[in-house]
Amino acid sequence: MSLLVKICGLSTRETLDVALQSGADMVGFVFFPPSPRHLSLEVARELGRHARGRAVKVALTVDADDATFGNIIDALQPDILQVHGKETTARLRDIKQKFGLPVMKALAVETPADLVALSGYAAVADRILFDAHPPKDATRPGGLGATFDWHVLEKLDLKLPFMVSGGLSAGNVAKAIRVTGAGGVDVSSGVESMPGVKDPEMIRAFIRAARDAEPASPLPVYGEMSDRSCDPGEGEPPQSHLSPNSRQEPLTPTLSPQGQGEGAETARQRDQKK
Image 1 (cartoon, rainbow, N blue to C red):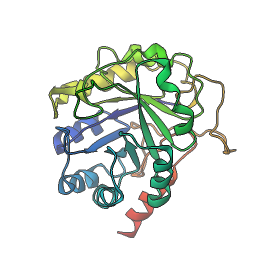
Image 2: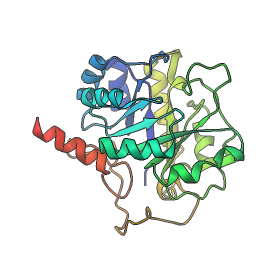
Image 3: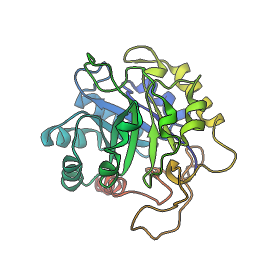
Image 4: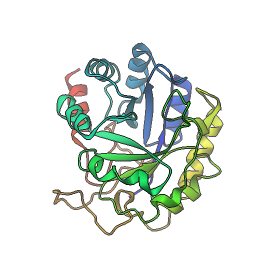
């Protein structure tokens, strides 16, 4: 499986193009007014059309209500929802049932004690994103450029695919991949010249550094630190990940070796009806 690289907080056509052309697997769009990366629905609609079929579109929200989700999904047509607030496992289950899209839950990590809630979220979420704890006076839960001790994840035994975020940059992403064994990395502030302003060359440099850090042999499936090779309840053999540099047709790329998730399939069906 190839490493997944996500560029989050994109807000302009220019920087989205740079991320796509540089081989980003996932592109993230923020819908949270306190963030300098917050998008209007009009801009999201335009960027979503531009990214369709070229990368996995991720909608980032923080404790959003159903109406907000509905508006975001209508505008962006995301392939996966990233929830970055204090959402409970019950809320995650409710979101998945109501909107028919896979959900990635962000968990703030500082010490091993922060992993206590992981098993509950892992039973519901489709993917986990480990991020750094925000400062107590922070107005938003992520995108603050803070790192955490990656060794907390070093012996993680998780069946679910997971990604690492928090203070990543071209200079430290290789170490983050090596220490955590994560199947994906997510960057936002680490490719910005100032909060909310993405730098094209920093985006290119980050993606190059992440690709250069990929081990010669495949990463453990889904970025696991265990020998399990399939999601619970799935009996299909792993399939090869669709590389961003070898796409033959404009289909939404797979999120995991198991093939397209329910949300990606739903997005394709919506596209075909247009």
